[in-house]
Structure formats: structure tokens, C-alpha cells
Amino acid sequence: MIYDVIVIGGGPAGLAAAIAAKKEGAQVLLIEREGRLGGILKQCIHDGFGLQRFKEKLSGPEYAERFIEEFHSLEIPAKLWTFVTKIRKSDQDFQVWTVSRNGVEMLVSRTLILATGCRERTAKQVSIHGTRPAGVYTAGTAQHFTNLQGVMPARRCVILGSGDIGLIMARRLKLEGADILGVYEVRPEPSGLTRNMIQCLEDFDIPLHLSETVTRIFGDDRLTGVEIAKVDEQMQPVPGTEKRIDCDTLILSVGLIPENEMAESLRVTMDPRTKGPVCDSWAMTDVPGVFSCGNAFHVNDLVDYVSESGELAGTSAARYFRELKGEADRTAENWISVETEGGLAYVVPQKIRKSDLDKKLVFYFRCRRTMGESMLAAISAGKTVFEKKYQAVRPPEMERVVIDLSKADIVGTSLVFQLGEVQA
Ligand SMILES: Cc1cc2nc3c(=O)[nH]c(=O)nc-3n(C[C@H](O)[C@H](O)[C@H](O)COP(=O)(O)OP(=O)(O)OC[C@H]3O[C@@H](n4cnc5c(N)ncnc54)[C@H](O)[C@@H]3O)c2cc1C
Image 1: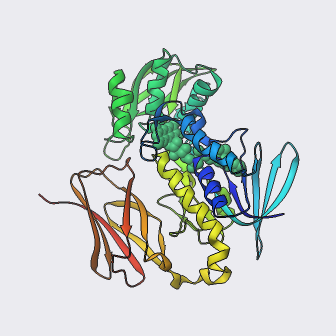
Image 2: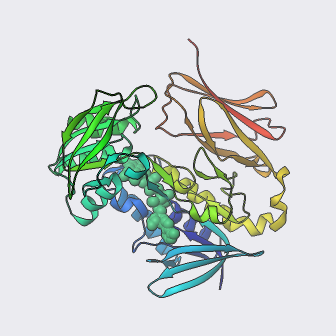
Image 3: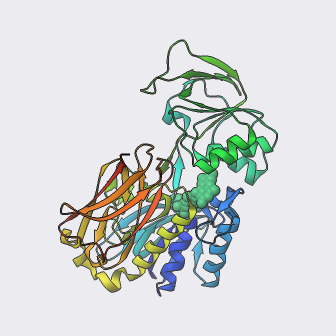
């Protein structure tokens, strides 16, 4: 059988994509390497999910359940415990190789949605000196032990990095009785959401140390301590500031990397700023018929936006053959490129389909540095076609902006976004 859409990944992005594609009438199959649907949400038992979408404070599993129920009610087939290992593109379709308990299988689809999420950076990727004892975990692994396996991974714990997962785990382990000796952040400002700084650290009296990092690990079988040092403006350790902290656990919350090996194997063009694919306003990559969404596209802080991007990818994939008719979509003239200037780290999508110029489009952006009152401007052919003011912007907080393109007079081949601080 040839599917219209194969979705790879059964997290919130993949679930929303599969549901949207099915509602558009497509023959959909979802493939997930784990035994249950829900992705990372399965282990996020804290609340705070769904505030935008459902106006409710749900836990991760509760949020996922709403989509899983709809997924099953639409009778969408899913292959669980099934790992996609390889994809090949032919003229008409994609061949998707999977490994499961049934062995190796090859499935065929007209379009693909890559919803594979992201993975955490590890100790190796931040180059800490010393031995490699047990007791050094990424925050997500510690969360998996604590919340899914009922195993307590820490007694006396240091957390490196102030990313959201680290902050959430600081609070979680404290509630389970661990001593959280401190969160150490190499940058001069925290990298988690403001709400997590307050609810996870301040409310639980957990100290945050900025411009400090872990420089060495001690211990043979199990971690016995870490060395901490202050860092200079280039984030290099300052000699003479080292101190040892005795602990049995080091938890790393030092960043997330979109999981895109399959996109790369298909020679999808990647954006070095997001580490995800370059996509257009249909969530399509530059390989026709391959779509990307959720944390595989770019790392999101809020699951509500992950679901939104999944829905766009699902609807677009289902409509792809009906409306784009193969070759026509390959022509560069079909797009306006989205460019960034000033204080912007990135804006996605990176391309606007010209056929979308009469629609309202959702853009997401992050800034490079914390700024006070700021103005986002979209400029076409030297003319400002859209402006929005922000009270403040911070790199950890992704912003979502809707622009009614029918009201913006966009001409030429590019739309330039600028973000600058408003001068008093
Ligand atoms: C600790 C933590 C706390 C968070 N807290 C909040 C919060 O309070 N509020 C909020 O709104 N958001 C929060 N988020 C963010 C939100 O949960 C994520 O942004 C969202 O889950 C990402 O969804 P996704 O579908 O893109 O990826 P994931 O949920 O990671 O799903 C990807 C799926 O793809 C599967 N997969 C990958 N590769 C393959 C393959 N080769 N073959 C088959 N399957 C594959 C994986 O097994 C996984 O199930 C939090 C995230 C984390 C990690």
C-alpha cells in the first residue's frame, strides 16, 4: 500500500500532524519508536501545558491524552516500537525502512512529516574534564528515571545549565527529598523561562549562580564531587576561582538539538541558526514532499506552538499533491525569502509561498540578547509593512507573531525582519 502521509514521531507535533492530515482526507500512518504515544510529554508530570490552546493548566500526559484520544477516534493507524532507520526518495514517493519486533520492513508514502523532536546535549558536548563515573545525567534522563521508572537518581545534586528542563528537575528532585546544592549557569543571565525561574528556583530557595560553570568531575564508580569556577566575559574559566563541591549527581541542562539525521540523509537544507530544516509557509522543506514540525523544526518552549506547527505540516502534506502538482513547486520564483537583521537570532518559517500572500501567517522568532522595550518590523523593498512593540524580549522566550499578509504590501523577493530596542 502507498500512504499519502507517513508521520515519523508520535509526540505532540506528530500527533497533531497526523490528525490534521487525516481530517484533510489523507491515508496516514504514524511511526513511533517507543511503546506509547505522547513523546517527551509522557515524562513531564508537572503542570503548565496547554495554557494557550486550552486555557487550562494541564500536565504533560493530560495534554498528550487529548490528542491521543482524537488520534484513536479518527482510527489513524500507528506502528509503535518501530524505529525508522533509513529513508530513500524516488521520483514519485519515499521508501521508509523500519526496524521493529517484526524485523525490517519497507513502507512507501507520497509525503513525509518529520516530527522526531530533539535530544539533549551531553557532558561530552560541553567538554568537562575528569573521570566518567555514574551519576552524570542529562536533565531529561533524570526526569525519565524519577517520573517514569520511580527511581531516585540523586541525593546531593549540582545542576549545570539553567535551561527549563534543569529548572524543572531542580524542583522535582527537591520535592523528592534531594539536596539541590545549586544551579550553575555559564552565561551572565538565566536561559530558562521567567516563570520557571520563579516557580522552580525562587519558590524552593534553590540558589542560581550566574557566570559560573563546572570545570571538572571527580569520582571512580560514582560521582563524588565537581569543581566549579567563575567565568570571564568570553565564558572562559577564571584561574584561581575554582572550588570543589561534594555531590553524588551532576545534572546537565545545557541545550537541546533538533533531531534531523533523516532530514540530512534526504539532503534537506538545514538552517545553522535553528539546527532544523529551512521550511516554507507550508512547513515544507526544500525537498518537495518532506515536511518538518515541532522541535525537529526548531526548539520550542511551549507545547501549544508545537501542536500548531504539527497541524500546519499535516494539513500541508495532505494538500500537497492535490494543490501543488509535483514539479511546479520547485521553482524559486514561488517563494519570498524571510531574512533577519539586528537583534534577531532567527525567524521561521524561512520562506513564504507567494500563494500565501493573501493569508494571515504565523511567524516565530527569538532574539539574540535581552532587550527592554523593542520593536519588531517587517520590511519589504525598503518599506515597513508591519510593526509590533514588545515590552521586553529575552532569548529563552520564543515569540509568536501573526501577520496579515493581505494587508502588507509585499513586493520583491525578500521580507526582512528587524528587531531593535526602542530608544527612550
Ligand atoms: C522537561 C521538559 C519540560 C517541558 N515543560 C513544558 C511546559 O511546562 N509547558 C509547555 O508548554 N511545554 C513544555 N515543554 C516543551 C514540550 O514538551 C516540547 O516542546 C514538545 O514535547 C515537543 O514535541 P515534539 O513532538 O516536537 O517532540 P517529542 O515530544 O520529543 O516527540 C518526538 C517523538 O519522535 C520519536 N522519534 C524520534 N526519532 C524517531 C525514529 N527514528 N523513529 C521513530 N520515532 C522516532 C520519539 O520517540 C518521540 O516520541 C517541556 C519539554 C521538556 C523536555
